Length: 92
Image 1 (spheres, rainbow, N blue to C red):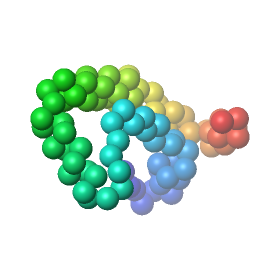
Image 2 (cartoon, one colour):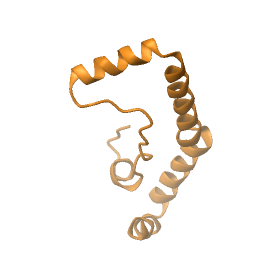
Image 3 (cartoon, helix red, strand yellow):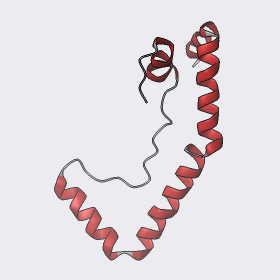
C-alpha cells in the first residue's frame, strides 16, 4: 500500500508491522533445495495435505477480515491521534 499523504505513508511504513511469519514448511536457500522439496511434496499426498491445512490455518488466523479490519482500525486511530500511536509503539 502506498500513498502520497504523509500521515497515511507514516502509518503504513512504520506504525503497523506486518503479521509475524510462521514457517510451517521451509526449504533451503538454494534452488536445488527448493526443487527437491517441491518434488517431495508432489510425491507425498499426506505432506501436501499437511501443508495445505497449515496454510489454511495461517490464513484464517493472520489474514481474516477480522484481523485485517483490526489493523485498518488501528491505522485510522493512529492517523486521528498520532500521540496514541506513538505510545503504542513505545510499549511494544
